[in-house]
Length: 402
Image (cartoon, rainbow, N blue to C red; front, top):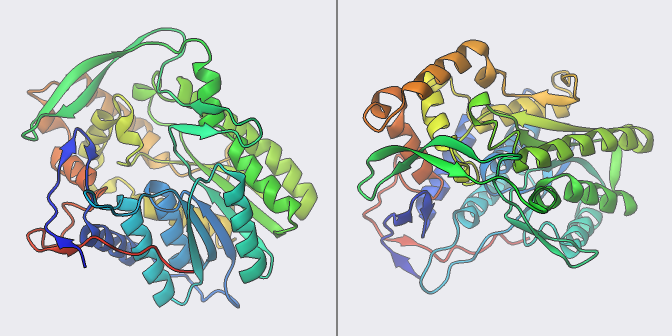
């Protein structure tokens, strides 16, 4: 037993520890908010693999898949165990909670912890599918955000960067001081140089997603009608220079090109489909690292209030489309668009007006900062309603057994 009182300690948007009870309750709340399946899936339900299953949209995909689509299968993530001085990462505790919910719902879900970019992890997943799930997979959802990737073929390690392309970019951004007071300031990001674009595409583009499909196809595991979706984001014109038109945007464009190529291959191979799913804005551990995104998201919430659609609701919609409950609706680029509520003209006009007025003195009236601060804390299991943060909590949660 290793119980202690855990208080939030952070450097900006990065927290040093996570709260096990808070992470568990957050997952339970997400689960309760996901609508149940319209009909009990026939047999044991579809077999799915979720790559990046422990955080952000990948976590939402896992939970919505389990409850709404009745999936069983494999979740893959990369999390750190609890240590002598630190708790486990938040994703470790969220995965343990997700596993318990899956078990209680009668869903056979295996969670594997390791480098999703590596071939050994791909082989491990393939082995589990072969041995435990009748050698087939019906769906694969790809949701990986990482700072670096090692190419299994060459051994070269690539590092992604958040930079504009062509010229330096100056933008407003939101930070909080040590007392939690908001500060709107301007930051300048230097443009991509050398092979920054190629490096970022090598990490965050579609290469690894395609490698997963290749590996499973080579093992003969793709079921007839197999579908796969890579989760993506486009975002607002306000953040386009650093995001969609920057190095990350180049990677997202590569993902979309990969989807089109995979879609043609899978149609021939198993009558399958490959799409990108463009999701709406959310507070995630990845998004808070992008200059300007924190300010934008706080202002967006100020405009929309409860009309801001949660990731679990968006992924419920995606699962309905992937499983045929509702038609698969694609835009002209072959993308599922779950971001219409965010990019509606009237919403973007209202956010742009607030953006222009945003200063340290005015931001409290323009954005929902209480919500934003709480959302950042909830990424690590803090500020979750119903949790007693004065009580000791057990940090040595085991990884879910197979």
